[in-house]
Image 1 (cartoon, rainbow, N blue to C red):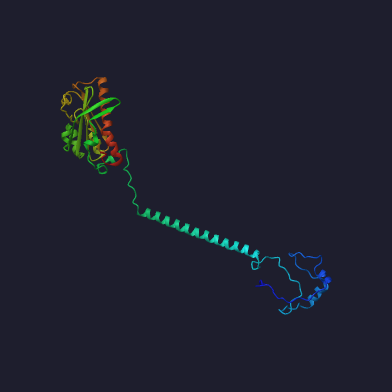
Image 2: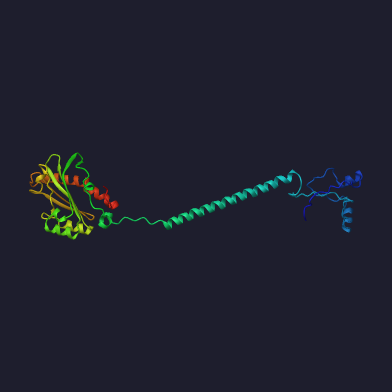
Length: 314
């Protein structure tokens, strides 16, 4: 059943009833507007069952009392109908904004995800460092830059824990056989495709200890290991004599030799007393201390950097 579009606004009056009839129709005086209206007598109810009520016309209004609906309708006139209606429309507007926000958000997320996927497809993977203890310095192909004097021996003076040493001369050669003494080591340098030897000579501040530190550049760790294995009293780095009064005599007399492998490099040393005498236990300790101080501050520091980058740090 639909709701009427408008209420009956006819100005014609209905037949006037007596006061007793009105009291009978509405017992107790004023009726509760939220309760349905009941029939005034059982006889009227019986007559109503026997014959249908006449249909009211614009010229003949119905005498039956107007029934009030207990159910609210949004089509009812007055302020009561406008409040809930505006509330409903406002709720729909908020819902529309919320849904629009979700659409924008999901579109933004989709766009960001697409950009991330595109970056993953176009970005080249970062190169990984070679494995092993010496990493890039293990092979010349991953550490291709030639050694430099500035890289290995950056300063003329080296000071460690109050002990001071001065570099007196330096040499860089490509014919590696000229930087070593002994047939076996010269052969190992050649077979290992040695491309350079850099040597430097140092003396301590007191003028009691002097020696040469050299580095040979070979093709691989295997080649450097071979050079180390042939090192002996007859096969060692060639001492580099200086021009000062002390180191000009380097290489004469008795000295101590050693070769270490560091990746594809062979680190070689010759150290001795100033007069070339054979050192006692105390003298040996002083020689070993000088070798340790100088090599750690110079060549090993430079080669450590190459293991990380495969390039000269100078």
